[in-house]
Length: 190
Image (tube, rainbow, N blue to C red; front, side, top):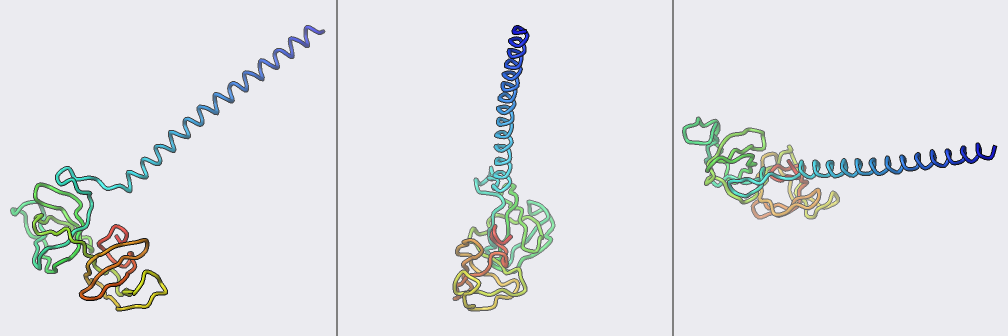
C-alpha cells in the first residue's frame, strides 16, 4: 500500500513538474511571438508615416514646393517632347512633388491634377492655398482668438510655421494663424 502511495505521489509530482515545465515553455514562446509582432507593428507604422528619400536629390518624397513664375507648363511626361496639359498662371502656387526623373519633377496640385514640371520652374519656398470656401485668419492659435481677415478659397499665402492644429502664415502685409485643415501645402493640411 505504501509503495502504491509513493508511486502515485511520485507520478503526481512528475506530471505536475511536466505541466509546469510546459507552461513555462509555452509562456516563453508566447512572449517571444508577442514581442516579434509588436516589433513588426511598430516598424510598419513608422514606415508608413515616414517619407521616402529621393536617390536623385536626397530630399524627401513627397514634399511641398511652389511655382517660381506666373507661367508654368504642366506636361504629360518628363521632357519637352510631351504635350502640355495645363498652364499654371499663379506664382507661388503650392504643389507637391511625388516623383523625380532627371531634371523633371512629377507634381500634384491642390485639386489633384498631376503632371511633370521642369525643376528650375519650382522653388523650395513654402506657400499654402486655402482649400475651404472661407476660413478665418486669427491673431493667435486658438478658436477663441479674434479674427484679422476672412480668407476665401484659393488665396495663396507664405507658410511660416505649423504647430498642432494651427499654421502661422503671411498674406501680403498680414500675418496670422489659420487652421491647418483649411489649407493645402502642408503635410498637416493635406
